[in-house]
Image (cartoon, rainbow, N blue to C red; front, side):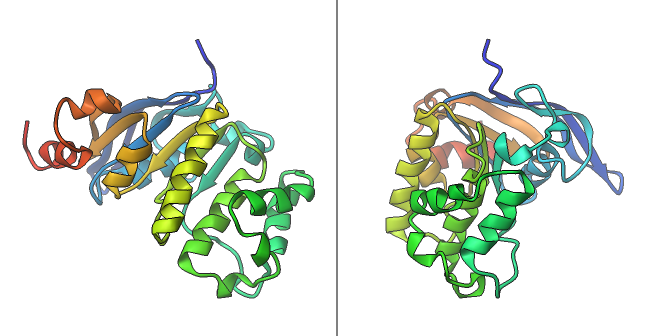
Length: 236
């Protein structure tokens, strides 16, 4: 049995007496792209925040059997693109990545490597505030890759990408999974998810309502969009 899986087990969380998550359990497997889907307010962000140690709940969420908070140099194990760039607008791109690298004892040579991977080499001296939304997304991916991690957790990574950028992302994310990375991808662009995902997990009202291999979950419906709406709008 592989140990390089993301395993979420029985997450339960309440806020103001209302259940936000109810026994949320699923697994993202090594060398595969797992799409984590759900309508707004379904519990996606809460689950990802708990997984990344940004929020608390009952239950467990681990990377290869280890909680995020227990990782000595987390960026060497887990790369996350979540909640924007998170740097000062006046800071230069390369400086931003060097600060991230230094925080986890990652060699500075990795900065130019990840900028090349995401196609931002020519922007290394640009200031964060001058980047387009799509460039900001690519920079977030560069930051996620900085420690060459086994696990990638990406929240809406294609938001702001133009059609060329989206096509690039499809190739990029498949290359990552082909290298044996464990990829957990949250997105609302169902057609894009259908183009790249191996496995799908659908959450609704804080509960997992479907999970499994993409083709199994689709079960002869024409598209993932059909599956999503049939499950989240009260259909069979």
